[in-house]
Length: 289
Ligand SMILES: NC(=O)c1ccc[n+]([C@@H]2O[C@H](COP(=O)([O-])OP(=O)(O)OC[C@H]3O[C@@H](n4cnc5c(N)ncnc54)[C@H](O)[C@@H]3O)[C@@H](O)[C@H]2O)c1
Image (cartoon, rainbow, N blue to C red; front, side):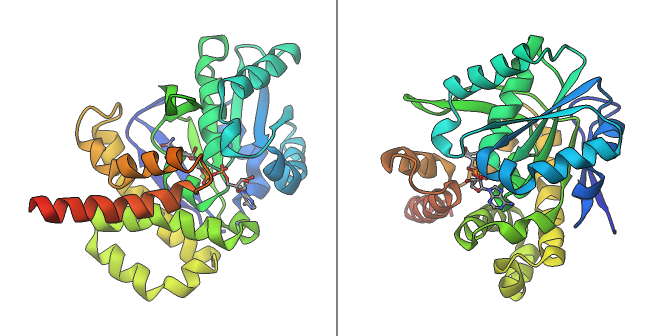
C-alpha cells in the first residue's frame, strides 16, 4: 500500500496534524487511530448509510488492534446536521460512559465530519477528533481545516467551533460505493481549487476526467493529494479564517444561499458549482475577474 502523507501546520501535536491518503488504508484503522491519537476508548460516529456500509469492517479493524471502539450512528441527511442530533449523540456518549480520555472518530461525509467534529469540540470541554472522510467532498475539503458545526433555521453552519483533527485518514477505495452524482458534486471543490490556485491542476483534471468521474482509486488519490496540499497551505497560514483563507469560499456565498432557497435538496457541491458561475459573472461585470 503506497501512502501519501501531507501535513497541515496548525492544530494539535508537534507542529500540525498528518493527512494520510492510501487506497486500502481502512484495513489498519484501529492501529492508525491508536498511533495518531492514543485513547482509552474511541466513539466512531457515522450516519446510518455509512454505518451500514463500513461500520462492521471499521469496528473489526479496531478489534484486530485490541482497541475499544463503539459505533454510534445517526440518521443520514443534511437536515440531521442539527442541534438535536448533536445533543442525541453527545447524550449517548455520556450514557455509555465515555470520559475525557476518549477520542471521537468521524467516519463519513461532510455532514458527519461537521456534526461529530462539533460533538468532539464540546464533549467534556473538548476531546480529540480523527476525521475519516468517505465522500469525495469530505476527502477534498471538509475533513481538513477544523471547521465543525451544525445548521439552524437561520442558516447553515451558524453554530460551531474550530476544532482541528489529530489526523485525517483517507481511503479512496471507499468511493466505489458512492453514487455518481455525489462523486460529481464532490469534484466541484477540486474545480474550485484549480480555478483559484492551480492552472496545471485544471489541465490535469480535464485529461483525467473519465477516471475521476468513475472514482478510479489511484486517480482519486492523486486528485485528493493535489487539492488537499493547497488547502493545507492556506489553512496553515490562516487557521481561523481571518484573511487569506476566505479565498476558499469562492462559489460558497451564492452556493449557501441556493442551498437554503432549495430547502437543502441541492447537494453542497451542486450549489457551489452554480455559485462559482454566478460569482464569476459578477466578477466579470465588475471587471475584477
Ligand atoms: N467543515 C468544512 O470545512 C466543510 C466544507 C465543505 C462542506 N462542508 C459540509 O459538508 C456537508 C456535505 O457533505 P457531503 O456532500 O459529504 O454530504 P453527506 O455527509 O450527507 O454525504 C452524502 C451521502 O453520501 C453517503 N455516503 C457517504 N460516504 C459514502 C460512501 N463511501 N458510499 C456510499 N454512500 C456514502 C452518506 O450517507 C450521505 O447519504 C455540508 O453540510 C457542508 O456544509 C463542510
